[in-house]
Image (cartoon, rainbow, N blue to C red):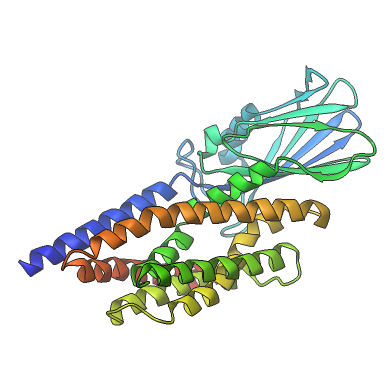
Length: 356
């Protein structure tokens, strides 16, 4: 009977991990758009960091072996999903170019050019790339024109941006609500961060201990998120991502080999929270926001991360507390933790060794 219960526990754990992986499957990457206005010409340079092949293009090779011809259907789809309107009139799109990655894990480069009737005073940019690259995709945009610049984020629920191109606009960060939504999306689709949180709270003890764990993680990642986003302290991305994977494996291993609540877990949460904060910062650092625009973006992005984290915890904690009523709960925790441990080790190998 105990064997059957154990098998059921492991089966539930496998189902949970499969569901998590499925939820992350729609996130195929992000785009970084640099939009430059010169006279009546708008140059739209898009760098696509694709973590998976889009379902609409199953034959696409995300390696240096890919050719421009193979990427042509993707270019065509991107051109169809981007529209620019200047002062009420549509800008004409010229032939574009696309370049495959030049190295493993590299970015796809897209160069587009739009010709407007006259020098724009108001520009509306409509981005529907989510229809091609999935709902988890987002574009971080930086638009520049003589006398000003502006930063914003395109999300499935925020697909259009209206920019007033006055000569004395200066630098602004628009759509701070988009940065909040980006923070929520970043934590809820970041399966490594969620796995770490799950491993933390499974052996977190009573509600007071859980509160200390979550608070420590929040304070820690907020500190390093700010330091890295403001370019005060920046560490190599590969080192950070590999350490995040190790943090998952370490906490899961504690769950397996220490069969009771871990009293020092809040300290572990704080230590590894510092590392996860560097991981959160990559999204904002890629945009290259100037400091006056970055502060608002940073605040709203961090609030979004906290909101997403709170939502995940509010779902997980009641379930875990309820499961403690059953005798098989310790075996369930061990079964899930073994799977999380394996995932953490695989991620570490991928991030630290395979990419070498």
